[in-house]
Image 1 (cartoon, rainbow, N blue to C red):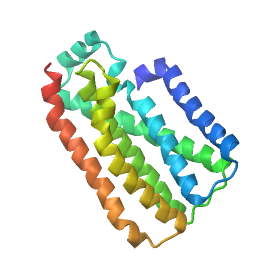
Image 2 (image 1 turned 90 degrees about the vertical axis):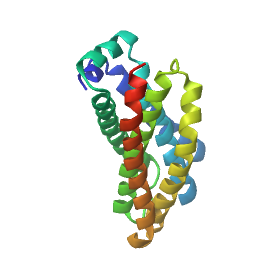
Image 3 (image 1 turned 30 degrees about the horizontal axis):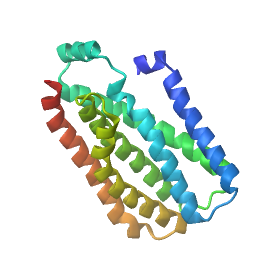
Image 4 (image 1 turned 135 degrees about the vertical axis):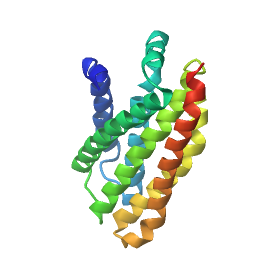
Length: 205
């Protein structure tokens, strides 16, 4: 957090991206139905999360990583990055949702359930992209590798998030969405567990 605060241009750039993207969407569409409203929001949040979390390991030089290697365990490193990126994504999602709802008319029937979907989506994006960023950093920071590795996880994740948030927009009973919530929680637990198991082997290289 201290390092990020010293280089605030990164966070400011991401916030500028979110606000400008929402404004461009508004200028292009003016008004949209609920399906497009929901899809646009998750597309904006997806690319914002990629820009935010992709820097987790890429911005660090080999010398800094060697320094981390001498003072901390690999599990502590990956877990701290997941926690930090989760905070960043929750903040970014809150700002994106506020700006998006302000510029576009808000059609949500169950705001509490939708905000739950946004929170779970933020955590899921943070855990998945942090894990993938850590793996791709050991392959020469190849963005192609990151895209290939994240694709099989992100697509099912987006499908569940869109379905859950659409249920919230339609104002359906919350018991209908319990399955999607459990799936998102399971994805987060599995991703964190895999990160803790896999990253120590990558860290040795």
